[in-house]
Amino acid sequence: ALGLLMLFLYGADMRHLFLGFAPSVPMLYYLVLSIPYRASRILAFVNPWKDPQGAGFQIIQSFVALGCGGLLGVGLGNSTQKLFYLPESHTDFIFSIIGEELGLVGTSLVVILFAVLVWKGMALAFRKDSEFSRLLMLGICSTIGLEAVINIGVSTGVLPTKGLPLPFM
Image 1 (tube, one colour):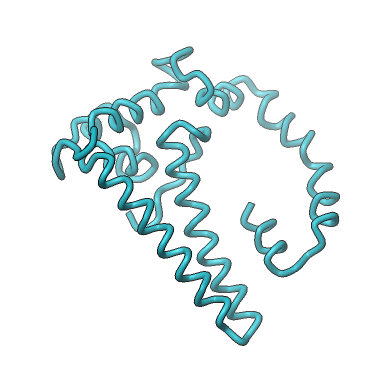
Image 2 (cartoon, one colour):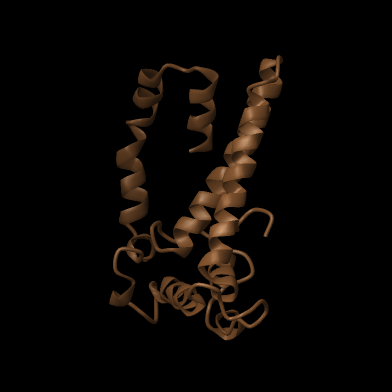
C-alpha cells in the first residue's frame, strides 16, 4: 500500500498502477484464502464470535478492553485486559489498552495527535523545494499515518488482525 501511495504521490499514471496491480489480485486471493488457517485469521474480524477461543479471541478481548474504558477509562495503569487476556497488549493492541485506561477521551486524543502529526508533516513536505526531500517526508508521514490507521482499525475490529504496532506507543 505504501509503495502504491508513493508512486501515486510521485505522479505515476493511475492506469499503469492499476494494470500492474490487477494481475496480482487472483494470486493474493489464492495465497490468503486457499490455506484454512490464513483464511480463518483474515476473516475472523467479520464474525469473531464464530470462534471465540481461536481466531476471534484477540479481537473479542480488544472489544472488551475498549468497552470497559467507557468515556473516561478505568485509570492509567489500571487495565485488567493487559494482564492475561489480550495477547500482545503492549504492541499490536496498545490502542485497546489506551481505550480501557483512558476511555473515549484518551483514544480520541491519540487519533487527533496522529492526524495533526501527519497533517503538519505533509504540509511541511509540500513546502520543500527538493523533490527528493518532499517525497521522503511524504513517505515518512504516509508510513506513520498508514500504520496508525491499520493498528486502530485492527483494534476496533474494522480490519483483520495484522500484527502491526501503533507508532510511538
